[in-house]
Length: 360
Image (cartoon, rainbow, N blue to C red):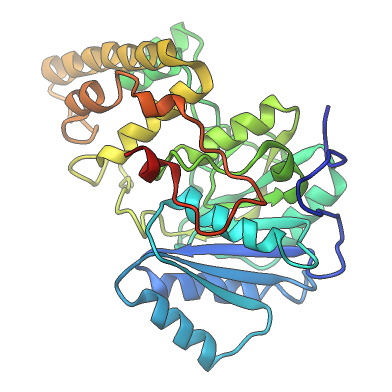
């Protein structure tokens, strides 16, 4: 297996002479949340010496960048930098810009933590993640356990989407799931260990692994981009781990307003078009055009079963509004652009437009 000894396009060294760990927070019109997340990072410095932070504004266009700049000038910090971007290129694009900037530094960090603006590190969590990567050179990324303000655990580690899984997701019927021997999508663990993929809301990456397989595919605007990246990492022989004892408070939906309520029902009337486009692109990038169609038809077949149950049993339909129509319209048939890869590299030219804009 190719691991941390693989040749990189930029000098990546474990325990580099500068900061060994960096945290990237991408803000989009949530400056107060981003600053709270940043303060939780600063609090980790006692346990993670040399920790640095890169605060990115993803083209908010609402004065957020100025507010962040003013806050950093009021409380200047030599190890925190602001990177304002001119366009809202999406999650993957903004993080790629940050990762490239960190890699180009004289002493690039060995590990980079991506932290959502609506998340806050709890004491000792980052140190646990760093310690795990240092002990396990075969692990490319380790994710933290997300929880609500009240301590309620949130889904943090998952199984990759499959055609059978899409059918079960649409059907929403536990009996069918058991008959088909389809495991639940959430891959819960009671102790640190390998999982298929972890949420990008709080994850620590090994820079050497990213140098080998590439960064996020910027053909995704938002959602599924970390799933595709971790699919590539796993295909290259790297492991992905989840540590349930590394805790992070996560509000959820801070920048996107896509939220699920405590009763399991969706709070938003309809999912945005980019969610369906990202789902379609994920299946296309990982399995080709036929897999896109198969996954879409499987979901719609399962969805028909659920809708029949809703009608006969007078149940509440917890799916977002227009789920079937939007799946058929936006996520069933492959698009030409889905076949074009836009995987970022650590040595990419800064400021390059994201792939989804180029293909539009």
